[in-house]
Structure formats: structure tokens, C-alpha cells
Length: 227
Ligand SMILES: Nc1ncnc2c1ncn2[C@@H]1O[C@H](COP(=O)(O)OP(=O)(O)O)[C@@H](O)[C@H]1O
Ligand SMILES: [Mg+2]
Image 1 (cartoon, helix red, strand yellow):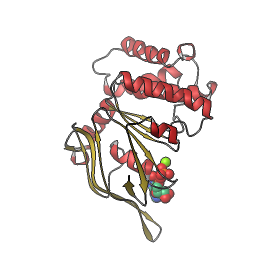
Image 2: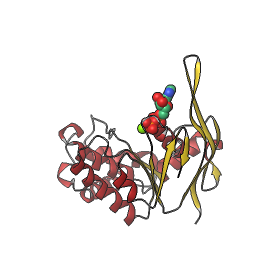
Image 3: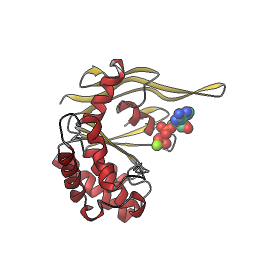
């Protein structure tokens, strides 16, 4: 199967005061098109860093990320941003919905950057509304995020991640702030929607049961993938 995104000898270091913190220490990891991959590891192991690097959000200190075989960080910022906006959806632990916007507007927002040139406002609104309905939030479209529960906010964030019809979904501890029952609910939507759309899924999790639902499981330890 062909690789959608691949880390090749990826290192990521941070300068912390007078020393250098080597978070990723030469990661080789290939994610095939259509596969689901769980990444686990202790807190501070570099899971979020790796996810950001794979998703075009954080430039590695050295090494390469290949997106469909192209050197992701050798592309200009504009081109990399365009790929990110059109092809990659992100779900974060803390939802990161914009508080001033309605839930519908939050879901619609990515459409303005990536598809705004092609889709008119009413089309975008219809698409966002459809996604909200799909995650069981049709009735909450006009609400502000702070009027929703954590699970509802994360479902809205999932709808937002799918707004531009990505091929890759990157989720960073998507149930980390939720109790287990609410978390299960979010995961059911996440796996269902990703499955229907044949998305490639990379999910960072502390939950072994979540990892077991993915086709592949990698543990990050001392800045390197094991198993
Ligand atoms: N911008 C940054 N500057 C300095 N250190 C950072 C930065 N981002 C992350 N780190 C450090 O890198 C390590 C890995 O962080 P992270 O990838 O968030 O781990 P995880 O998601 O596995 O908990 C941690 O020790 C963290 O403190
Ligand atoms: Mg993290």
C-alpha cells in the first residue's frame, strides 16, 4: 500500500534555557493510505510533537516528512498550508473552538480558507449543517461553544475537522478531557465517520481500547517509536 505520510529520520529539538531537549530522535514512520494508527506513550514522550510534524504544523529540526512522496517542509509555506487546509483534519484534546462564533460558524470556518474560492456561503452553511447533524448536534448549531458539554464540543470539533473533506485525520488525545462514557461517544462518531470516508487516521491516545481499534499501534519511547 502506498504511503500517505512518512517521517524519515525526523528529529525535533527544543532549546530550553542553556540546553537542548531532543524530543524526537530520528523517527522513521510510514502511514499508509487508509490505515488507522494509534500512537501511545508516556506524557512528554513527544506524541503531540510528532503529530504536529506529520501534519505540517511544526518543522522538524532535521529529517523529512514526505506527504504523498513530496518533501512537505521543502514546499513553500503557502503550498504546505493549502495541503493542510484541504487534505488534513485535526482534532485536539481541548477542542479549540472559537468562543465568539456559533457552533455552525466554527464548523464552517475551514471552508472559508480552503474552499471559499469555489463554494458560495449558502453551500458552506449547508455542508456545515449536514456535518453537525451527522454528529448529533443539529439542534445546537446556533449555540456558542460554552453552552455545550465537553463531548458536544468535541463532536463539533470533529465536524470542523471534516469540513473540507480531508483524506487524513490527526487526533491528539481526543477524549483526554472527557469521562469514559462521553469519550466513547466521541470515539464512536470519530471511527464511524473516518470509516465511511476511508480516511487515514492517526490517533494519539492513552486508552488501550482505542489503540486496539486501530489497525496499527506504535509506542513512542525516548523519542523513538517501538513495537
Ligand atoms: N515549544 C516547546 N518548547 C520547549 N519544549 C517543548 C515545546 N513543546 C514541547 N516541548 C517539550 O517536548 C516534550 C514532548 O512534548 P509533547 O510532544 O507535547 O509530548 P506528549 O504529547 O507525548 O505529552 C515535553 O518534554 C515538552 O515539555
Ligand atoms: Mg500531547
